[in-house]
Length: 560
Image 1 (cartoon, rainbow, N blue to C red):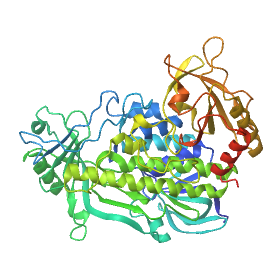
Image 2: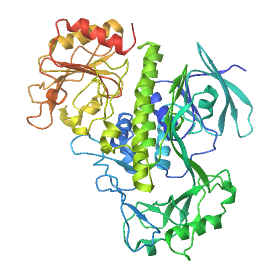
Image 3: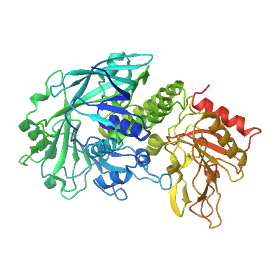
Image 4: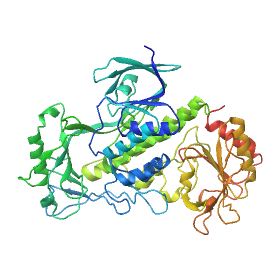
Protein backbone atom coordinates (compact mmCIF):
# COMPACT_ATOMS: atom_id res chain seq x y z
CA UNK A 1 0.00 0.00 0.00
CA UNK A 2 1.47 3.37 -1.04
CA UNK A 3 2.16 5.91 1.71
CA UNK A 4 -0.26 8.79 2.10
CA UNK A 5 1.14 12.21 1.17
CA UNK A 6 0.66 15.58 2.85
CA UNK A 7 2.69 18.76 3.16
CA UNK A 8 2.47 19.06 6.95
CA UNK A 9 1.50 16.43 9.52
CA UNK A 10 0.29 17.84 12.85
CA UNK A 11 0.36 15.52 15.86
CA UNK A 12 -2.08 16.52 18.60
CA UNK A 13 -5.64 17.76 18.28
CA UNK A 14 -6.00 20.19 21.14
CA UNK A 15 -5.84 23.98 21.01
CA UNK A 16 -2.41 24.51 19.47
CA UNK A 17 -2.62 21.61 17.05
CA UNK A 18 -6.00 22.75 15.76
CA UNK A 19 -4.80 26.35 15.51
CA UNK A 20 -1.78 25.15 13.51
CA UNK A 21 -4.05 23.35 11.08
CA UNK A 22 -6.35 26.35 10.64
CA UNK A 23 -3.50 28.77 9.97
CA UNK A 24 -1.78 26.37 7.55
CA UNK A 25 -4.95 25.51 5.66
CA UNK A 26 -5.85 29.21 5.40
CA UNK A 27 -2.47 29.72 3.72
CA UNK A 28 -3.36 26.95 1.26
CA UNK A 29 -1.06 24.28 2.72
CA UNK A 30 -2.26 20.64 2.52
CA UNK A 31 -2.27 19.51 6.14
CA UNK A 32 -3.31 16.44 8.13
CA UNK A 33 -3.91 16.33 11.88
CA UNK A 34 -3.94 13.15 13.97
CA UNK A 35 -5.23 12.92 17.54
CA UNK A 36 -5.23 9.69 19.55
CA UNK A 37 -8.34 10.51 21.60
CA UNK A 38 -11.77 9.80 20.07
CA UNK A 39 -13.00 13.38 20.47
CA UNK A 40 -12.24 16.75 21.98
CA UNK A 41 -11.95 17.18 25.73
CA UNK A 42 -15.02 19.03 27.02
CA UNK A 43 -13.11 20.79 29.79
CA UNK A 44 -12.74 24.60 29.73
CA UNK A 45 -9.04 24.73 30.76
CA UNK A 46 -7.96 28.02 29.16
CA UNK A 47 -10.81 30.43 29.87
CA UNK A 48 -10.21 33.22 27.44
CA UNK A 49 -7.89 34.39 24.69
CA UNK A 50 -5.87 37.60 24.63
CA UNK A 51 -6.52 40.42 22.15
CA UNK A 52 -3.39 39.41 20.20
CA UNK A 53 -4.72 35.85 19.85
CA UNK A 54 -8.10 37.22 18.75
CA UNK A 55 -6.23 39.25 16.12
CA UNK A 56 -4.75 36.00 14.77
CA UNK A 57 -8.20 34.41 14.64
CA UNK A 58 -9.57 37.57 13.01
CA UNK A 59 -7.17 36.98 10.09
CA UNK A 60 -8.71 33.59 9.35
CA UNK A 61 -12.32 34.70 9.77
CA UNK A 62 -12.96 33.30 13.25
CA UNK A 63 -13.42 36.44 15.33
CA UNK A 64 -17.24 36.61 14.92
CA UNK A 65 -17.61 32.95 15.89
CA UNK A 66 -15.38 33.47 18.95
CA UNK A 67 -17.57 36.36 20.04
CA UNK A 68 -20.75 34.33 19.50
CA UNK A 69 -19.43 31.38 21.54
CA UNK A 70 -18.05 33.50 24.41
CA UNK A 71 -19.56 32.95 27.84
CA UNK A 72 -19.78 36.70 28.50
CA UNK A 73 -19.78 39.92 26.46
CA UNK A 74 -16.19 40.96 25.84
CA UNK A 75 -17.02 44.62 26.51
CA UNK A 76 -18.26 44.02 30.06
CA UNK A 77 -16.40 40.88 31.11
CA UNK A 78 -14.10 41.14 34.10
CA UNK A 79 -12.15 38.39 35.86
CA UNK A 80 -12.99 38.29 39.57
CA UNK A 81 -10.23 36.38 41.38
CA UNK A 82 -10.45 35.62 45.09
CA UNK A 83 -8.43 33.84 47.78
CA UNK A 84 -10.01 32.17 50.79
CA UNK A 85 -10.03 29.09 53.00
CA UNK A 86 -13.34 27.99 51.47
CA UNK A 87 -15.82 29.51 49.05
CA UNK A 88 -18.20 30.08 51.99
CA UNK A 89 -15.81 32.35 53.92
CA UNK A 90 -17.32 35.58 55.15
CA UNK A 91 -14.59 37.62 53.50
CA UNK A 92 -12.48 37.07 50.39
CA UNK A 93 -8.98 38.31 49.73
CA UNK A 94 -7.70 39.33 46.30
CA UNK A 95 -4.44 38.15 44.70
CA UNK A 96 -1.71 40.75 44.97
CA UNK A 97 -0.64 40.69 41.33
CA UNK A 98 -1.13 43.78 39.21
CA UNK A 99 -1.30 42.85 35.57
CA UNK A 100 -2.56 46.08 34.08
CA UNK A 101 -5.26 46.41 31.48
CA UNK A 102 -5.07 43.45 29.04
CA UNK A 103 -6.70 45.59 26.36
CA UNK A 104 -5.56 49.22 26.66
CA UNK A 105 -7.87 51.56 24.78
CA UNK A 106 -6.87 52.30 21.21
CA UNK A 107 -4.15 49.65 20.91
CA UNK A 108 -6.05 46.91 19.08
CA UNK A 109 -9.33 46.45 17.21
CA UNK A 110 -9.90 43.26 19.21
CA UNK A 111 -11.08 42.73 22.77
CA UNK A 112 -10.22 39.95 25.15
CA UNK A 113 -12.16 36.83 24.13
CA UNK A 114 -13.91 35.24 27.14
CA UNK A 115 -14.33 31.79 25.60
CA UNK A 116 -13.68 28.37 27.12
CA UNK A 117 -11.03 26.25 25.44
CA UNK A 118 -13.43 23.40 24.70
CA UNK A 119 -15.75 25.76 22.83
CA UNK A 120 -12.83 27.35 21.01
CA UNK A 121 -11.55 23.94 19.92
CA UNK A 122 -14.95 23.11 18.44
CA UNK A 123 -14.75 26.30 16.37
CA UNK A 124 -11.18 25.56 15.27
CA UNK A 125 -11.99 22.00 14.24
CA UNK A 126 -14.98 23.14 12.20
CA UNK A 127 -12.95 25.91 10.54
CA UNK A 128 -10.08 23.53 9.77
CA UNK A 129 -12.39 21.14 7.96
CA UNK A 130 -14.12 24.02 6.20
CA UNK A 131 -10.71 25.07 4.86
CA UNK A 132 -10.05 21.56 3.55
CA UNK A 133 -7.78 20.17 6.27
CA UNK A 134 -7.82 16.44 7.05
CA UNK A 135 -8.58 16.11 10.79
CA UNK A 136 -8.50 12.56 12.21
CA UNK A 137 -9.38 11.53 15.75
CA UNK A 138 -8.74 8.06 17.23
CA UNK A 139 -5.51 8.09 15.22
CA UNK A 140 -2.10 7.96 16.83
CA UNK A 141 1.46 8.42 15.69
CA UNK A 142 3.35 5.24 16.59
CA UNK A 143 6.76 6.15 15.11
CA UNK A 144 8.45 8.53 12.72
CA UNK A 145 11.78 9.20 11.08
CA UNK A 146 13.04 12.09 9.00
CA UNK A 147 15.56 12.60 6.24
CA UNK A 148 16.58 15.39 3.85
CA UNK A 149 13.40 14.93 1.81
CA UNK A 150 10.74 14.78 4.49
CA UNK A 151 9.20 12.85 7.37
CA UNK A 152 8.00 9.25 7.28
CA UNK A 153 5.34 8.56 9.92
CA UNK A 154 3.61 5.36 10.97
CA UNK A 155 -0.01 5.96 12.00
CA UNK A 156 -2.55 3.64 13.60
CA UNK A 157 -6.34 3.82 13.65
CA UNK A 158 -7.21 3.10 17.31
CA UNK A 159 -10.72 1.95 16.40
CA UNK A 160 -9.33 -1.34 15.18
CA UNK A 161 -7.78 -0.31 11.91
CA UNK A 162 -4.34 -1.32 10.75
CA UNK A 163 -1.21 0.80 10.87
CA UNK A 164 -0.35 2.73 7.74
CA UNK A 165 2.40 5.00 6.49
CA UNK A 166 2.22 8.72 5.76
CA UNK A 167 4.83 11.01 4.21
CA UNK A 168 5.04 14.74 4.95
CA UNK A 169 7.40 17.55 4.16
CA UNK A 170 7.27 18.70 7.78
CA UNK A 171 5.86 17.54 11.12
CA UNK A 172 4.47 19.77 13.89
CA UNK A 173 4.43 18.31 17.39
CA UNK A 174 1.48 19.68 19.36
CA UNK A 175 1.34 16.59 21.56
CA UNK A 176 1.44 18.12 25.04
CA UNK A 177 3.82 18.80 27.88
CA UNK A 178 5.19 15.27 27.98
CA UNK A 179 5.49 15.27 24.13
CA UNK A 180 6.52 11.81 22.90
CA UNK A 181 7.77 13.51 19.73
CA UNK A 182 10.09 15.76 21.74
CA UNK A 183 11.26 12.79 23.79
CA UNK A 184 11.96 10.79 20.64
CA UNK A 185 14.06 13.64 19.26
CA UNK A 186 16.03 13.84 22.50
CA UNK A 187 15.31 17.55 23.00
CA UNK A 188 15.86 18.55 26.62
CA UNK A 189 13.88 21.13 28.57
CA UNK A 190 15.09 23.92 30.86
CA UNK A 191 13.41 25.71 33.73
CA UNK A 192 11.97 24.73 37.13
CA UNK A 193 10.18 21.76 35.59
CA UNK A 194 7.12 20.12 37.13
CA UNK A 195 5.77 22.07 40.11
CA UNK A 196 2.92 19.75 41.02
CA UNK A 197 0.10 17.71 39.51
CA UNK A 198 -3.59 18.51 39.42
CA UNK A 199 -6.61 16.28 39.40
CA UNK A 200 -9.60 18.02 37.88
CA UNK A 201 -13.30 17.43 37.34
CA UNK A 202 -16.28 19.22 35.84
CA UNK A 203 -19.07 19.26 38.42
CA UNK A 204 -22.68 20.29 38.78
CA UNK A 205 -23.24 21.76 42.25
CA UNK A 206 -25.32 24.70 43.47
CA UNK A 207 -22.69 26.69 45.37
CA UNK A 208 -24.71 29.91 45.56
CA UNK A 209 -25.23 29.44 49.34
CA UNK A 210 -21.43 29.79 49.60
CA UNK A 211 -20.98 32.79 47.30
CA UNK A 212 -24.08 34.56 48.68
CA UNK A 213 -24.44 36.80 45.65
CA UNK A 214 -20.74 37.61 45.41
CA UNK A 215 -19.24 37.39 41.93
CA UNK A 216 -16.46 34.81 41.58
CA UNK A 217 -14.64 33.74 38.41
CA UNK A 218 -11.81 31.77 40.02
CA UNK A 219 -11.40 30.95 43.70
CA UNK A 220 -7.98 29.93 45.06
CA UNK A 221 -8.73 27.92 48.17
CA UNK A 222 -6.96 26.17 51.05
CA UNK A 223 -9.56 23.42 51.57
CA UNK A 224 -9.45 20.49 51.36
CA UNK A 225 -5.75 21.31 50.77
CA UNK A 226 -3.62 24.12 49.33
CA UNK A 227 -3.60 24.60 45.55
CA UNK A 228 -7.31 23.91 45.29
CA UNK A 229 -9.38 25.97 42.85
CA UNK A 230 -13.03 26.34 41.93
CA UNK A 231 -13.64 28.04 38.60
CA UNK A 232 -17.12 29.15 37.60
CA UNK A 233 -18.38 27.47 34.44
CA UNK A 234 -21.73 29.25 34.14
CA UNK A 235 -23.36 32.51 35.20
CA UNK A 236 -25.54 30.91 37.85
CA UNK A 237 -23.09 29.37 40.32
CA UNK A 238 -24.25 25.82 39.57
CA UNK A 239 -21.51 24.44 37.31
CA UNK A 240 -17.86 24.50 38.31
CA UNK A 241 -14.43 23.24 37.39
CA UNK A 242 -12.77 21.72 40.45
CA UNK A 243 -9.01 21.16 40.69
CA UNK A 244 -6.68 20.15 43.45
CA UNK A 245 -3.20 18.75 43.82
CA UNK A 246 -2.28 15.09 43.93
CA UNK A 247 0.88 12.97 43.91
CA UNK A 248 0.86 10.50 40.98
CA UNK A 249 3.71 8.52 42.56
CA UNK A 250 1.47 7.83 45.57
CA UNK A 251 -1.98 7.45 44.02
CA UNK A 252 -3.58 7.06 40.63
CA UNK A 253 -6.46 8.85 38.98
CA UNK A 254 -8.54 5.73 39.52
CA UNK A 255 -8.32 6.42 43.26
CA UNK A 256 -10.41 9.55 42.74
CA UNK A 257 -13.90 8.09 42.75
CA UNK A 258 -16.99 10.21 42.14
CA UNK A 259 -17.80 10.26 45.84
CA UNK A 260 -14.27 11.18 46.88
CA UNK A 261 -14.18 14.10 44.47
CA UNK A 262 -17.66 15.16 45.55
CA UNK A 263 -16.48 15.27 49.18
CA UNK A 264 -13.49 17.39 48.15
CA UNK A 265 -15.78 19.83 46.34
CA UNK A 266 -17.96 20.10 49.46
CA UNK A 267 -14.87 20.86 51.56
CA UNK A 268 -13.66 23.50 49.10
CA UNK A 269 -17.09 25.13 48.99
CA UNK A 270 -17.61 24.97 52.75
CA UNK A 271 -20.98 23.28 52.15
CA UNK A 272 -20.85 19.78 53.71
CA UNK A 273 -24.30 18.71 52.48
CA UNK A 274 -24.42 20.11 48.94
CA UNK A 275 -25.25 17.71 46.10
CA UNK A 276 -22.34 17.25 43.69
CA UNK A 277 -22.50 15.42 40.34
CA UNK A 278 -19.50 14.79 38.08
CA UNK A 279 -19.85 15.12 34.30
CA UNK A 280 -18.03 13.09 31.58
CA UNK A 281 -15.38 15.19 29.84
CA UNK A 282 -15.02 13.37 26.51
CA UNK A 283 -18.24 12.77 24.54
CA UNK A 284 -19.08 9.11 24.18
CA UNK A 285 -16.96 8.08 27.15
CA UNK A 286 -17.32 7.95 30.94
CA UNK A 287 -14.02 9.78 31.58
CA UNK A 288 -14.78 12.18 34.42
CA UNK A 289 -11.38 12.65 36.06
CA UNK A 290 -8.26 13.96 34.38
CA UNK A 291 -4.77 14.75 35.60
CA UNK A 292 -2.62 17.69 34.48
CA UNK A 293 0.93 18.69 35.24
CA UNK A 294 1.54 22.25 36.37
CA UNK A 295 5.07 23.24 35.53
CA UNK A 296 7.43 25.80 34.12
CA UNK A 297 9.78 24.61 31.40
CA UNK A 298 10.90 25.51 27.89
CA UNK A 299 12.36 23.13 25.31
CA UNK A 300 15.94 23.98 24.45
CA UNK A 301 15.15 23.58 20.78
CA UNK A 302 11.86 24.42 19.09
CA UNK A 303 13.01 22.71 15.92
CA UNK A 304 15.00 19.63 15.04
CA UNK A 305 15.35 19.12 11.30
CA UNK A 306 11.90 18.96 9.75
CA UNK A 307 10.08 18.68 13.09
CA UNK A 308 8.77 21.70 15.02
CA UNK A 309 7.46 21.94 18.59
CA UNK A 310 4.47 24.18 19.38
CA UNK A 311 2.35 24.80 22.47
CA UNK A 312 2.90 22.60 25.52
CA UNK A 313 5.43 20.49 23.63
CA UNK A 314 7.61 23.60 23.39
CA UNK A 315 6.79 25.26 26.71
CA UNK A 316 4.86 24.54 29.88
CA UNK A 317 3.70 27.37 32.13
CA UNK A 318 1.44 27.73 35.14
CA UNK A 319 -2.11 28.50 33.96
CA UNK A 320 -2.32 31.85 35.75
CA UNK A 321 -3.06 34.59 33.27
CA UNK A 322 -3.84 32.10 30.49
CA UNK A 323 -0.43 32.83 29.02
CA UNK A 324 0.53 29.30 28.02
CA UNK A 325 -2.40 28.60 25.72
CA UNK A 326 -2.21 32.02 24.10
CA UNK A 327 1.53 31.60 23.59
CA UNK A 328 0.86 28.26 21.89
CA UNK A 329 -1.60 29.78 19.42
CA UNK A 330 0.93 32.49 18.62
CA UNK A 331 3.61 29.80 18.08
CA UNK A 332 1.36 28.31 15.43
CA UNK A 333 0.62 31.71 13.90
CA UNK A 334 4.33 32.48 13.64
CA UNK A 335 5.22 29.13 12.09
CA UNK A 336 2.35 28.73 9.61
CA UNK A 337 3.20 31.59 7.22
CA UNK A 338 6.86 30.55 7.19
CA UNK A 339 6.07 26.94 6.29
CA UNK A 340 3.64 28.16 3.63
CA UNK A 341 6.26 30.50 2.13
CA UNK A 342 8.89 27.75 2.00
CA UNK A 343 6.50 25.17 0.55
CA UNK A 344 5.40 27.65 -2.16
CA UNK A 345 8.99 28.43 -3.02
CA UNK A 346 8.66 32.08 -2.00
CA UNK A 347 11.26 31.63 0.74
CA UNK A 348 14.36 29.56 1.27
CA UNK A 349 14.28 26.80 3.92
CA UNK A 350 16.62 28.84 6.13
CA UNK A 351 13.62 31.06 6.93
CA UNK A 352 12.43 28.27 9.20
CA UNK A 353 15.39 28.85 11.54
CA UNK A 354 13.69 32.07 12.61
CA UNK A 355 10.87 30.13 14.25
CA UNK A 356 13.11 28.94 17.08
CA UNK A 357 14.96 32.25 17.32
CA UNK A 358 11.73 34.22 17.75
CA UNK A 359 9.47 31.93 19.72
CA UNK A 360 12.08 30.37 22.04
CA UNK A 361 13.00 33.77 23.50
CA UNK A 362 9.32 34.67 23.76
CA UNK A 363 8.63 31.35 25.49
CA UNK A 364 11.24 32.09 28.16
CA UNK A 365 9.89 35.58 28.74
CA UNK A 366 6.31 34.39 29.03
CA UNK A 367 7.17 31.42 31.25
CA UNK A 368 8.83 33.76 33.75
CA UNK A 369 5.80 36.02 33.81
CA UNK A 370 3.34 33.13 34.18
CA UNK A 371 5.45 31.73 37.04
CA UNK A 372 5.50 35.11 38.78
CA UNK A 373 1.73 35.43 38.47
CA UNK A 374 1.31 31.92 39.82
CA UNK A 375 3.30 32.96 42.88
CA UNK A 376 1.18 36.05 43.39
CA UNK A 377 -2.02 33.99 43.36
CA UNK A 378 -1.13 30.67 44.94
CA UNK A 379 2.20 30.80 46.74
CA UNK A 380 5.89 31.62 46.33
CA UNK A 381 6.85 32.07 42.69
CA UNK A 382 9.81 33.18 40.65
CA UNK A 383 11.49 36.38 41.73
CA UNK A 384 10.63 38.15 38.49
CA UNK A 385 9.09 41.63 38.39
CA UNK A 386 5.57 41.54 37.00
CA UNK A 387 5.26 43.27 33.64
CA UNK A 388 2.10 44.84 32.29
CA UNK A 389 -0.05 42.04 30.89
CA UNK A 390 -0.40 43.59 27.44
CA UNK A 391 3.40 43.96 27.15
CA UNK A 392 3.79 40.23 27.80
CA UNK A 393 0.93 39.09 25.57
CA UNK A 394 1.53 41.46 22.64
CA UNK A 395 4.62 43.60 23.23
CA UNK A 396 7.35 41.00 22.73
CA UNK A 397 10.15 41.86 20.30
CA UNK A 398 11.61 39.36 17.83
CA UNK A 399 15.30 39.05 16.96
CA UNK A 400 16.01 36.79 13.98
CA UNK A 401 17.09 36.66 10.35
CA UNK A 402 13.46 37.44 9.43
CA UNK A 403 13.73 40.91 11.03
CA UNK A 404 16.17 43.59 9.88
CA UNK A 405 17.18 46.59 11.97
CA UNK A 406 15.81 45.45 15.33
CA UNK A 407 17.00 47.33 18.42
CA UNK A 408 19.49 45.64 20.71
CA UNK A 409 17.18 45.87 23.70
CA UNK A 410 14.56 43.15 23.26
CA UNK A 411 12.53 44.02 26.37
CA UNK A 412 8.77 43.75 25.81
CA UNK A 413 7.04 47.05 25.14
CA UNK A 414 3.79 48.32 26.68
CA UNK A 415 1.14 48.73 24.01
CA UNK A 416 1.36 52.49 23.94
CA UNK A 417 5.01 52.20 22.85
CA UNK A 418 4.45 49.96 19.81
CA UNK A 419 5.22 52.32 16.94
CA UNK A 420 6.45 50.26 14.01
CA UNK A 421 9.77 49.17 15.50
CA UNK A 422 11.28 46.23 13.54
CA UNK A 423 10.53 42.98 15.34
CA UNK A 424 7.33 44.21 17.00
CA UNK A 425 3.68 43.70 16.15
CA UNK A 426 2.69 46.50 13.77
CA UNK A 427 0.52 49.10 15.53
CA UNK A 428 -3.22 49.37 15.22
CA UNK A 429 -4.52 52.56 13.61
CA UNK A 430 -8.17 52.99 12.56
CA UNK A 431 -8.32 53.75 8.82
CA UNK A 432 -10.90 54.32 6.09
CA UNK A 433 -11.10 52.35 2.87
CA UNK A 434 -13.97 51.99 0.40
CA UNK A 435 -16.32 53.87 2.64
CA UNK A 436 -15.81 51.77 5.75
CA UNK A 437 -13.58 51.85 8.78
CA UNK A 438 -11.11 49.05 9.41
CA UNK A 439 -7.81 48.68 11.25
CA UNK A 440 -4.32 48.60 9.83
CA UNK A 441 -4.21 45.16 11.48
CA UNK A 442 -6.68 44.00 8.82
CA UNK A 443 -4.14 44.69 6.05
CA UNK A 444 -1.97 41.75 7.09
CA UNK A 445 -2.32 38.00 6.64
CA UNK A 446 -1.59 36.39 3.28
CA UNK A 447 1.24 38.49 1.83
CA UNK A 448 3.97 40.91 2.78
CA UNK A 449 2.71 44.48 3.03
CA UNK A 450 4.59 47.68 2.27
CA UNK A 451 3.29 50.81 3.98
CA UNK A 452 4.67 53.85 2.18
CA UNK A 453 4.41 57.52 3.10
CA UNK A 454 2.36 59.96 1.06
CA UNK A 455 5.51 61.11 -0.78
CA UNK A 456 7.21 57.70 -1.08
CA UNK A 457 6.83 57.04 -4.82
CA UNK A 458 10.34 55.60 -4.93
CA UNK A 459 9.46 52.91 -2.40
CA UNK A 460 6.27 51.97 -4.25
CA UNK A 461 8.16 51.52 -7.50
CA UNK A 462 10.83 49.57 -5.61
CA UNK A 463 8.16 47.20 -4.29
CA UNK A 464 6.81 46.66 -7.78
CA UNK A 465 10.18 45.79 -9.28
CA UNK A 466 11.46 43.76 -6.31
CA UNK A 467 8.28 41.71 -6.03
CA UNK A 468 8.34 40.96 -9.75
CA UNK A 469 12.02 40.04 -9.59
CA UNK A 470 11.53 37.61 -6.71
CA UNK A 471 8.12 36.31 -7.80
CA UNK A 472 6.66 37.23 -4.41
CA UNK A 473 3.47 39.31 -4.04
CA UNK A 474 3.78 42.48 -1.97
CA UNK A 475 0.69 44.50 -1.16
CA UNK A 476 1.34 48.23 -1.16
CA UNK A 477 -0.52 50.98 0.67
CA UNK A 478 0.15 54.70 0.46
CA UNK A 479 -0.46 56.30 3.84
CA UNK A 480 -2.68 59.35 3.94
CA UNK A 481 -3.65 59.22 0.24
CA UNK A 482 -7.24 60.03 -0.71
CA UNK A 483 -9.30 60.06 -3.87
CA UNK A 484 -11.55 62.92 -4.98
CA UNK A 485 -14.30 61.81 -2.61
CA UNK A 486 -12.01 61.83 0.39
CA UNK A 487 -11.97 58.03 0.44
CA UNK A 488 -9.28 55.58 -0.60
CA UNK A 489 -8.42 54.18 -3.99
CA UNK A 490 -9.09 50.76 -5.42
CA UNK A 491 -7.34 47.88 -3.70
CA UNK A 492 -4.36 46.72 -5.74
CA UNK A 493 -1.39 44.41 -5.37
CA UNK A 494 1.98 45.06 -6.92
CA UNK A 495 4.29 42.24 -7.89
CA UNK A 496 3.41 39.03 -9.65
CA UNK A 497 -0.33 39.24 -9.02
CA UNK A 498 -2.93 41.98 -9.27
CA UNK A 499 -2.64 45.49 -10.65
CA UNK A 500 0.00 48.19 -10.56
CA UNK A 501 -1.84 50.48 -8.18
CA UNK A 502 -1.17 51.05 -4.51
CA UNK A 503 -4.08 51.53 -2.14
CA UNK A 504 -4.50 54.88 -0.46
CA UNK A 505 -5.13 54.82 3.28
CA UNK A 506 -6.47 57.67 5.35
CA UNK A 507 -6.91 57.89 9.11
CA UNK A 508 -10.45 57.23 10.29
CA UNK A 509 -10.09 60.08 12.77
CA UNK A 510 -9.30 63.54 11.45
CA UNK A 511 -5.76 64.62 12.19
CA UNK A 512 -4.35 61.12 12.68
CA UNK A 513 -0.94 60.78 11.03
CA UNK A 514 -0.75 57.08 10.14
CA UNK A 515 2.87 57.36 9.06
CA UNK A 516 3.96 58.96 12.30
CA UNK A 517 2.20 56.19 14.26
CA UNK A 518 4.49 53.78 12.38
CA UNK A 519 7.65 55.85 12.82
CA UNK A 520 7.65 57.06 9.20
CA UNK A 521 8.18 60.40 7.53
CA UNK A 522 6.25 61.17 4.32
CA UNK A 523 8.99 59.62 2.15
CA UNK A 524 9.60 56.54 4.33
CA UNK A 525 8.38 52.94 4.15
CA UNK A 526 7.85 49.92 6.36
CA UNK A 527 7.55 46.20 5.51
CA UNK A 528 5.15 44.00 7.47
CA UNK A 529 5.20 40.19 7.46
CA UNK A 530 2.06 38.08 7.04
CA UNK A 531 1.88 37.58 10.82
CA UNK A 532 1.62 41.35 11.34
CA UNK A 533 5.19 41.77 12.61
CA UNK A 534 7.35 44.58 11.26
CA UNK A 535 10.19 43.05 9.26
CA UNK A 536 12.01 46.29 8.35
CA UNK A 537 11.61 50.05 8.39
CA UNK A 538 13.26 52.97 6.64
CA UNK A 539 11.95 56.17 8.19
CA UNK A 540 12.63 58.27 5.12
CA UNK A 541 13.90 58.08 1.53
CA UNK A 542 16.89 55.98 0.40
CA UNK A 543 19.46 56.67 -2.29
CA UNK A 544 18.49 53.51 -4.20
CA UNK A 545 15.15 52.22 -2.87
CA UNK A 546 14.96 49.44 -5.46
CA UNK A 547 18.26 47.91 -4.42
CA UNK A 548 17.49 48.40 -0.73
CA UNK A 549 14.06 46.77 -0.79
CA UNK A 550 15.35 43.90 -2.92
CA UNK A 551 18.09 43.34 -0.32
CA UNK A 552 15.53 43.40 2.48
CA UNK A 553 13.13 40.94 0.86
CA UNK A 554 15.94 38.54 -0.05
CA UNK A 555 17.29 38.63 3.50
CA UNK A 556 13.94 38.23 5.27
CA UNK A 557 12.87 35.40 2.93
CA UNK A 558 16.28 33.70 3.03
CA UNK A 559 16.60 33.98 -0.74
CA UNK A 560 20.36 34.58 -0.74
